[in-house]
Image (cartoon, rainbow, N blue to C red; front, side, top):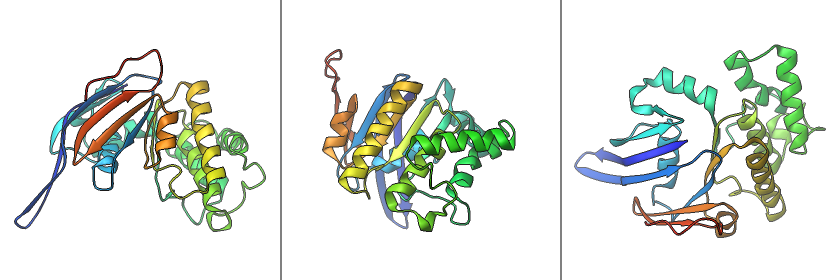
Length: 235
């Protein structure tokens, strides 16, 4: 599903030269549930953006479901994301002037999938599944942080993405709400076979995934499988 080869991301500011990622390589098979961990500044969010095609590497390549992102222009990458990728931002990125239902419908409307009624039905079903069936007509400012996060998750899944990227999906949530989000991710991973790659600071959440990739100073320092059927992978 995902092949990263020699991913490097560098920034220049005047005479300063900063390497955020340094020749990162790994594969993620379809249906996997992978966490990326590491201290602040280790390159986690940058890596997630490159894998999702939200940014382009200075060097290296990403293949997403058999498509080399380096061969696509910005419009083609956006089209690919609309068809195959879900992304949950740490800050939710909900549209404040739209209700929960309308926010979840946006990807369906942009892709032209089905009728307006079908889009509303699917969005309502997903919001009900995440426990917000009675909040679908509320605006983001009328929802708690945990409720907004669940709207963002429903939106990310509404197009049945082949792969979901999530940046600190429980980072701003209380323990009970965070646990519910983790269970939802696991459930959707199992039921829909969606590949999930998430960034987290939470070691307990990382331990719930099938595999943890640890970054430090822009390089992979550890790559561990948590299930008994896998062996430890070399860093």
